[in-house]
Length: 150
Image (cartoon, rainbow, N blue to C red):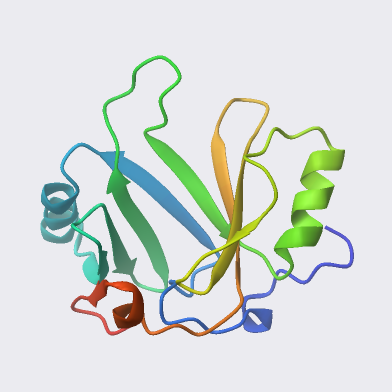
C-alpha cells in the first residue's frame, strides 16, 4: 500500500487494543469456555474480557487472537475473520472500495478508541481493518482486564 505506513510503531497506542498488527478473530458458541480451553491447551493468557464474554482478547507472545461469539459454520456464516491494524483506515477503505471490495460501509469510530470497517475478500473471507485513534482504558467502556495488563 504505497504511501501508507504499516509499521506498528506508527500506530496510536491504545490499551483497549492488542499491539499486534494482524489479529485473527475466531468464532465460538461459548466464548468463555473457548478462551479457557485455548489458555489451558495453548498457553494463551487473557488480555481483556469484553461485555458478558461476547469477546475475549488473548495474548500469545507478541501476538494476539480475539475469541468472539459465533456459531459452527453454516452457509454464509463467519466462524472467523482477520483484524488488521492500519495507520489510516479512511485511506485504506477508499483503496478497498476502489478495488471493488464489498464493505460494511464507511469506517466507524467506536468508544474503545478504534476506527474500523469490515470488507470481504474474493474468497468471501471477512477482514476488519482498524486504526487506533485514542488510548482508551478498557474499564471506561466496560472491558475487564485479564491476566495480562492492557
